[in-house]
Length: 184
Image (cartoon, rainbow, N blue to C red; front, side, top):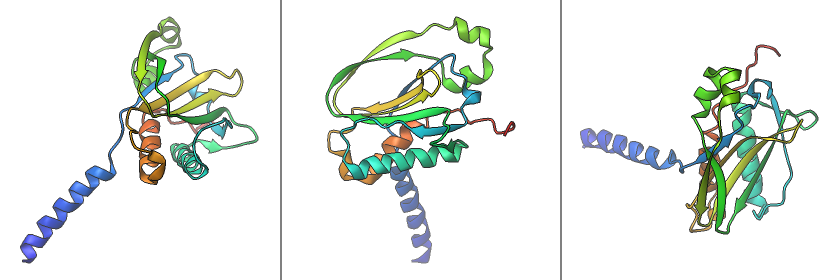
């Protein structure tokens, strides 16, 4: 019996891990000329959202924890970028961009190459249920990064905190820039 127990336990843990680590498909856009090396701290930009209070707090705390884990400092007094987030329950047409992967573009292309890069517009028809997270430069209020996941919320995700966290983390896992801490 003991010999059967261990393989069954391992199988259960593997299957359970697959459900826990599920991520939603995400699209993201970023500013080719964003000076990502200079973004060290963040604050939240308050925006009207249709989220109930408890999910709004969960989204905010999940974003804050994730960015701090990456090495960004939460600094309401002097942030280098703002974070905003919202949920759109209605269908919409959305304009995004076909872009190279952020990590390789930001780290390995010269400033001259970045300036020559062209934004290739891409239109999305989004059914209902879209979570958006946006990072905005505090100096010129330009969008530096934006991620969104959609079409997954036929049921109300606000009824399940796990689904909210998975949606937020799925988006943030596509932000692949870690701040350089050498100059602090």
